[in-house]
Length: 299
Image (tube, rainbow, N blue to C red; front, side):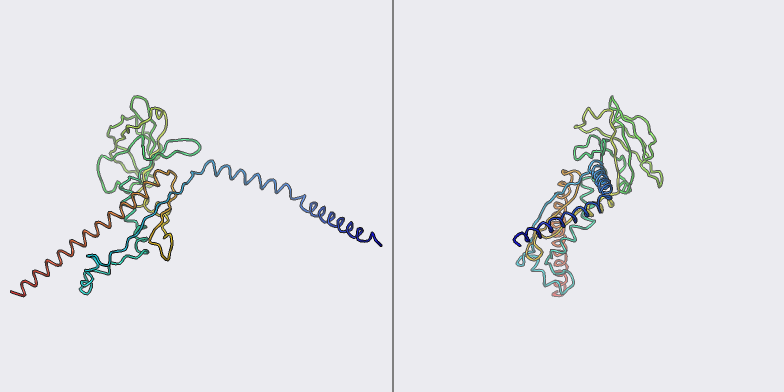
């Protein structure tokens, strides 16, 4: 009678052992699939890390100042009834949309020449160079259509300040000297597009670049601006109270991302100054016209 609890405990332990062994037997036939899955995902992770260009997050923030209600701009509210001015108060949403606008980003792309990118051929991923370009592609004619070219060309650096130029289709245009003008086919699969260009060597041109390959990718200004905007995030730090906007941008080269955000803020401030100048000019012209009209009526 006294040993009955021990017997029940032993029965329970034996039952658990049986269930565990059954569980192992049920899944033993799937072990090979577990192993294959682990090996497969390890291979995928290896190739993703090795061959995918890493992206870095770059952040910045600015304070959006509201228009001074006692300032000169708000004092022009009396002209709103005449249809000349709208309400001068800025909203955070309006400023966010303006900062995301294509027009503002196009100015950034033009200022930094971001539609032309330079890569040094490397394994497994080509290395983008910014901002210390070893070479610079320069158009001899300043056509508006130059900003809409979509192509990729290759330059093989040779000794004695020479290089060989290859078009988008891999066709060689011959051996050239640096700073020499020549006709290059900057077209793509859709058609040829011959332009007069030259390749310049920068002061920071490394001597070990001789014998290597430089890839130059040319994109349209609008497409480059749209691509940057797709990777740009702008949001308020605190949606309810804060007037601080936080910028986040993913970029393969950190210095390039920093330059983009800094120039975007500069372009935003410059646009604000231009708007104020335009407002002051329009106000002055309006007041002059009204004074002339009043003077004629008094006469």
